[in-house]
Length: 217
Picture 1 (tube, rainbow, N blue to C red):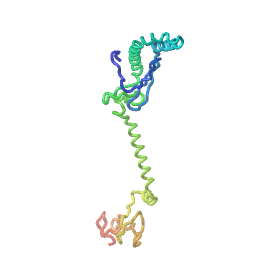
Picture 2 (picture 1 turned 45 degrees about the vertical axis):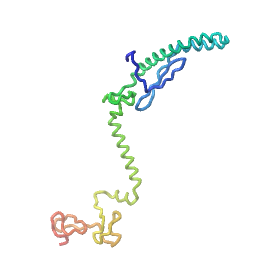
Picture 3 (picture 1 turned 180 degrees about the horizontal axis):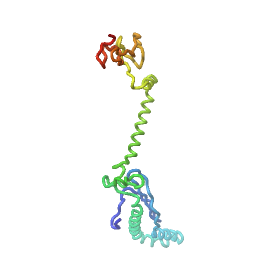
Picture 4 (picture 1 turned 60 degrees about the vertical axis):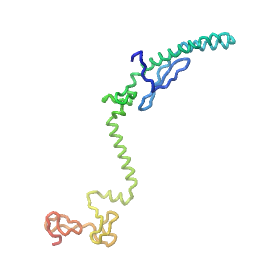
């Protein structure tokens, strides 16, 4: 990183004090942070010694401390900027900036090395597929839990069987899978076969759908 420029000017927290400098840098995607090593500040040590001497000698050095405060403040700012630049250099290998959305993300969890993009712009397909499957399974679980016992028995009976919606004799609608009509007692499931070709005939069929022969004749 160039010493003339400083990156990471937004996604960080400054934990610095008069005694030293320390920073926490955060991933724009997951929010996890990395804290840099503490860097002691020599000016902070001098200030502490001055405060101690001032309290011991009853303010004898107080005036000298006041006179040097402005210079110390400017020097602290310079030391702070240098410490921040070093901290950014220290943390830089752990982060990558996405060329598409410009977000700074951690390489460990939020960077897609294969695509060269952050995982917001280029998610891991395996993770995405697994997530989709999990959501589908959850939806199926809720759907199955909401089904009545009668509906479950109907579904468990198999989708290959034809379920008669209305009675072929009286036309009454059928609430579920049944063998006989609840209104007239008529048989719903026909076991008739064509006498010509042997194909199974649907309830009420007048002609065979396979060979066209008249049913029952």
